[in-house]
Length: 98
Image 1 (cartoon, rainbow, N blue to C red):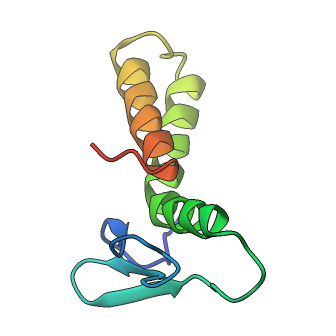
Image 2: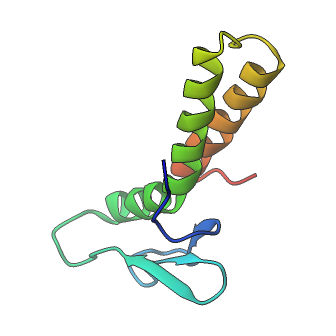
Image 3: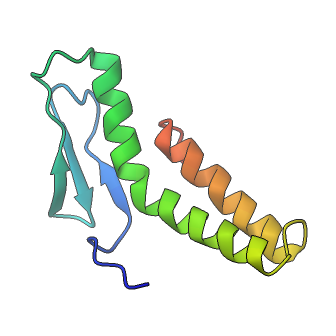
């Protein structure tokens, strides 16, 4: 399956997202900007920025887990690596960066 989304690790601007709501790929490529005037709480805006920034990592982790599961490798080295990748992606989505 071909990936058409913007390549590179995505990251969010510095907090607070209510003031800096931009998601970047690389140094100067703007991928998204979160709406901050739509009646969301500041906590929701922060969480949305984290989740959008984590999207490529989450997708890659799901692909790795699916591949390992199809190969019957969950628990084996490839499966363990895929699970670690998934944990890092989940942490990123919740604003915990490694």
